[in-house]
Image (cartoon, rainbow, N blue to C red; front, side, top):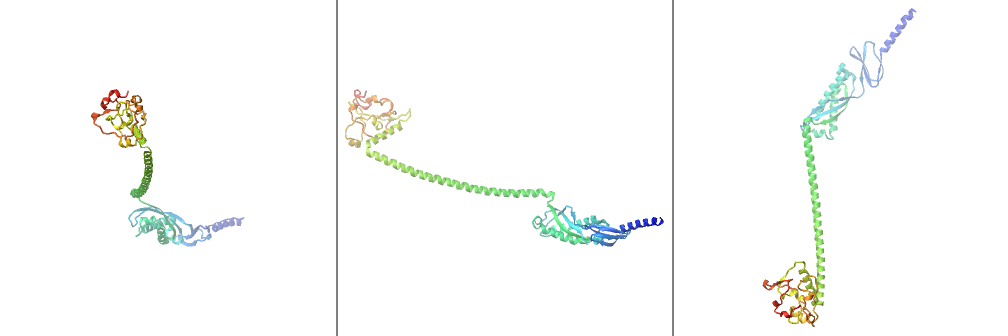
Length: 375
């Protein structure tokens, strides 16, 4: 009983000592064994590790790739156009011993503060170098600039036991006070391009309209030419028909033309003509009486061409004057020779020897006996 009392506590103490002297290193970690703040062992491979209980301390550091977002900074490229840049970096702890010696008990927090200062310095140095403008930063050469920042930051971070894996620029913007001026310049540039496009469009439209107008003029001219040619051929054919008709019967042709003249001259309800009583215009309205009634004036050609006396031809027309009708022909008109063809010419007569058409003609004005006038 007495031995058991001492053996059980000894076994418990031994187990506690053994368990406190063993530690496990994960595959995502690196470990340092410290004794009174001094590094006694480094455990970088995953597995079991041993330490002196109560004397040694195990400090673990993350072996994975860590992320760091830098603060927004303002840089000035060589073209003096200020830019606001923010970046992020990917890093890992490459040497835990050097890392512990560089940052001490501060650990990752102190290391990230110092790494951010390194990154900001390298960003200003690379982006502010000669021949690096704002257009270069915003162009395809942006990748080479980020590689330059990473290489220089990696060389500086080795003193901290860190390995900078990558550096990327997230945003590159103009300062707030410069945005409005930049947007105004962009608007002016777009408006200028729009005005150029409008001017080119108007020029093309004018060319199309001019071509269309010329086509219209040419088409109308060609149509007018063809119409004039057709009209001239028709006029020539009409004149040929008239000439053939005149040659076949000149007397009837003169009579037909006189009827056309009557129709055109006596058109309307208030037509008034002033002429001498012996005017040849109304030659076909006159006939020869028994006792010296008026005889139409004849040309020498018509007298020679008259073969024999014929019955008088009295044209019937709705446009004849009121004083010349069928009932006012001379009594012996059936025995008088017919009227001869005369040209329907209206001579210019003095006003004192004229009387208006439409009023009865006084037989005394013709020098004939009133007894022989037509009833």
